[in-house]
Structures are given as structure tokens and as C-alpha cells.
Amino acid sequence: MKKILIRLDKVSKAFGKNNVIKDFSLDVYEGEFLTLLGPSGCGKTTVLRLISGLETVTKGKVYIDSVDVTDIDATKREVNTIFQNLALFPKMTVVENISFGLKMKKIPPNEINKRVKSIIKLVKLEGLENRYPNELSGGQQQRVAIARGIIMNPKVLLLDESLCSLDLKLKKSMQVELKKIQKKLGITFIYVTHAQDEALSMSDRIVVINNGKIEQIDSPENIYQHPNSVFVADFIGEANIIDAKVLDNKDSLKLSYFNDQVICINTIEEFNIGETIKLVIRPENVIVSKEDKKGILGKITGITYEGDSTKLSIELNNEIMIDARIVDKDTFDEDDIVYIRFSKNFIVPLRNRYEK
Amino acid sequence: MKNKIFKLVFILPIIIYSIVLVLLPLLYVLFLSFLTSDSYGGIIYSFTFKNYLNILEFTYIKMFIKSSLIAIITTVICILISYPFALILRTKSKNFQNIATKLIMIPFLTNSLIRTYGWIILLRKSGVINTTLLTLGVINKPLSLMYNNLGIIIGMVYTLLPFMLLPVCSSVLAIDNSLIEAGRDLGAKPLQIFKKIILPQTLSGVFNGSLMVFIPAIGYFFISDILGGGKTMIIGNLIKNQFLSARNWPFGSAISVFLIIVTFFLVKIYKHFGGKMDDLGGF
Image (cartoon, rainbow over all chains, first blue to last red; front, side):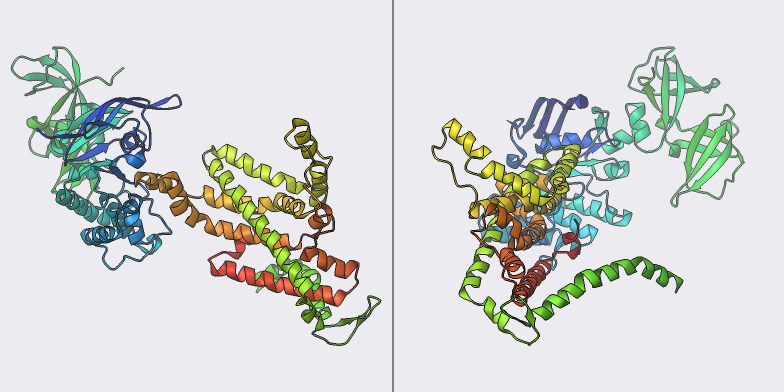
């Protein structure tokens, strides 16, 4: 059993009349890399600020290491934040920035020196000690911000969309480095992002947030392969979402879709006969073929080349659009008539709870 | 080519204005400062350094020191008022901030001479402040609030405060909130946040404001005339008197030149500390 480091207990936060976070409960385990993922404005940054203490809760309790910190100010909480804009102090050098927190804690100078040296080595900032933030590149600034946080030995490091400002390549390498640092120090990281690829590649667990509420908490694999709502399916990765009707629910789920198609799938969740549900099918699980006449007939209306793969937009007879992802681009051309099938094991049935 | 002529047409009035009304008079003052005056206030065209040597007389040195002290105290009081004001303004809404900054500017629409006269009503022995305090029984004898150095300083602070408030406010308001949050996050208490984060970032604003307050404070003779009761002379009075009463134009010119040189060095120091000339000409 892993130790719970942070517990949010039915936390709510309102700004004026605007309820940003509603009845939010979350346990964060020691040493994990947890990502809060959601569209902008969903309240994920607010959750982070409630943990750091920069924002106070309207209702509910916040526990850090089993201690109720609901009324304790950010100054005294043993968590540190890497801000979205990094918030490096512009008039301080790299070393001054990194040592700021320790100085505030009145740590003896020789110990500060020792810790600063080892942190600078850890985040690979050697030789830049006396530069000012504006003399550093984006990636270097990022590292200073991370160093300034982790030197405090926080119980949890909170990262607020910290990699968003970097270009793609730097972002990728920072992701790897961040993960390495986290493994090495064993510090719990809570990372906020709206970028699902970041969330999938770095996290131990992902918390998908929508409208101030948790949609799903699970491992990246499960979030991607077994989304529990249409929102999660749609927000993370690409998904074809189609309507289906339950015909039978005895051994396996027998469904009809597109009026004339019938499929049987295995699922743990139970559905009632006659219920209308949604099916989620990832584009890479759509099998496209020119010969296999058993499939559903459709016409390719668009081909998007994406480097490592190609996305086909296929219009079916019933005017429904289906996206398919294939590796071999050369086989298909626009306006080709094709037959599609869905690989049975990757169809996720979802209860239709977002309909009116 | 055409473009250049076009530009010149627009700039020309300003160039002519600057030459005729600023540069030539200044050169004339510089020229005058090396001449001799006769006892009737006339000017004798004989070259001399005597006017500059006269400045070094004890009476004038004392006046310079006193003037500078009044200007320094004025500047410090302005700083002490501006920071709390700016820090409180930070916590208010954008709308409120805009209105407050506009309100600071409003007194500028009235002539500063008239505004200074207004202070007499407040400060004199039978003025608003004294009568109020007497009626309330806080004091039993009216306070001397004017016709002394205190009166001058009150007048100076009042007149020059906006020049400090505006740059200090704009630099304090420009600090990104996340920096202050980062400070809190790293365990800094409010005073430490002010000292380590806010102060270093707003120092240029304070330099800028100090220059804008200190330099006029040396020269604003009318405030010293009205609220100092003519008893206390600052350099501004001295220059004015040399031109209007003593009619010793060459000596007045020499002091003016001296003051310009001092100002020049102050600006030099300001630039040395990273100040921008644009910020000084902002209003």
C-alpha cells in the first residue's frame, strides 16, 4: 500500500459566484508522477494552487502528509511550484534564484553553497551560475526554475504547464529530463497540462478534469484504451464516436450500429437491452482495405500525411465520417472506394451520459 | 530624398523652437555668466571668472547645502508616500488603478502657484489645521506650519509628489504577480518579498522619480516665497533675486549655469544606474 502524500477532501473553490472546483476529492501517492489534464479553463491550475496554498479553499480540506494544511499559508507549506511563466526573479543571478528559498529558511551559507552546487550539477547548469535569467535560453530558464523548486526538498513539486513555452524538440528532451530527475529524487510531481501527449508520456497516473470535476483517474494506458466517458475519449487522442444500440447483454454485448451492422464485444460494464450507447474507436483500430468486401463501404475524402502515419478521412454511405490511421500511405488515394472494419477488441462501449 | 524633406518639414518647427527658445537663451546665460555687472544693474562687457568664484562664498555654499537638504527630504518623503500607495494600488482592480492614476494627474490641471496659495488657508496660524486641532484640544497653541522650512517641505512634497507617484506606481504595478507568488511559495514573508523582489525591480522607477522631484525642488522659488515667507532662501530664490531684485544678471547666470551642471551630473548618475532618458520625458 502506497503512502498518501496529498489528500484533497471534497474541496470546492469559488471565485465570486463562479464555482471553479466542485466537490473535488483526490489522493496523491508518495513518489508518483501525477498529471492533471484538462482543457483550458477546467480548473486544473486552481487545483494546483489550492495544494500550494496560493489559493484558499472555499469548502473542504487539504492534507499534506496527513496534516491538515487547509488554513496554512503557502509560505509554510512544504510544497513548491514551478510557475507557468517560470517566474524567475529577473534581478537575481542563477545562483541567487536557486538559493532564494534556502536563504528565506535561514539555512547556513555553507550548506546553501553545497546544496546549490549539487543541484546545479543535477540540472546541468554548470558555468551559468552568475548569469541573469534574461541571458539564458528557454530550456536553461526552465532548468533554473526546476532547480529553484527541488532544492527546497519539497514533499511535492507542482508544475503548472511548465513546458508549454518550449519548442517541440526542447519540450521532448525536458520531458525526459524531468522524468529522470523525478525518478532520481523520488519527489512526488503533480504536473498540470492541457497537452495530452505530455500527460501520456510522463505520468504514472492521469487525472482528467472537466468543468471543475474529475472525469477519470487512471494510468495513461487505461485512460487511452478504456476511457470511461465520451469526454475523456474525445479529449485524449483521436476517437471515432458512433451511436449503437444494445441488442443482447447475456454473455457478450451484442450491438447494432449504422442501422445494419451487428457486433459482439466483451465488456465488464453492464448495459440494458435497448439502451442507446456510444462506441469509441481509435483511428488506428480502424482496418481499411480495398479487397475485404465484408467491411462497410466508404469513400476516402481526405488524406492527411503526418510523418510517421497517415490519417484517412472516410465517408461512409450513411454520410458518417470515420477517421482511420494507417502506416502505409501509398496504398490509398483520394476518392478510392474502401471497406472498413473495426477491430473488435478495441471498441469501447460507453454509457450515453452526456446526451440531454 | 523626398522622404527626408518630408521629415524635415515636420521636425523643423521643433528645431526652430528649441534653438530660439532653449538653446540661444541658454547660450546667452552662459555668455552673461562671464561678464561683470555695474552697480546700477547694467552689464559691462569685460570677461571675468569672478561670478563663479562668488558662488564659493560661505553664504551661498550654506544656501546650496540647505537647498539640497530640503530637496533630499522632499524626495525621501515622496518615496515614503509613494511605495505604500503603489503597494495598496497593486491589490486593487485594474479599473480602480486606472482611476487612481488619473486622479493623481488632476491637480496638474490647476496652476501650481494657485494651489500653493491654497495651502496658506490650511497651514497658517488661524488656518484650517490649527483651528481644528485647537478646537479638538489636541494642542493649546497654534503650530507654526508655514513661513519656515516645514512649510516649504509641505509645499514641495505636495507639488512634486505626482512625479514620484507615477513612476513608482508604474514600476510596482508592472511586477508580475507570479514573482510575488513564487516568493511566497519559496517561504518569503511579506517584508522579505518587498526587500528582495519588489524593491530591486522598482529601483529604476524610484531613481527616475527622485530625479524628477529633486531637481525642481532645488529651484521652485515660488513655494519657498509663499510658504517659506521669504525667510528661507533656496537656490531658486537666489537666482530669481539676482535677476529681479539685485539686478546682478551675470551672477544670477553663473548660479544658473552651476545648477545646470549639477543637474547634468545627476542625470549622468541616473543613466549610469540604467535609467532611461525616455522615462524622464514621459510627462
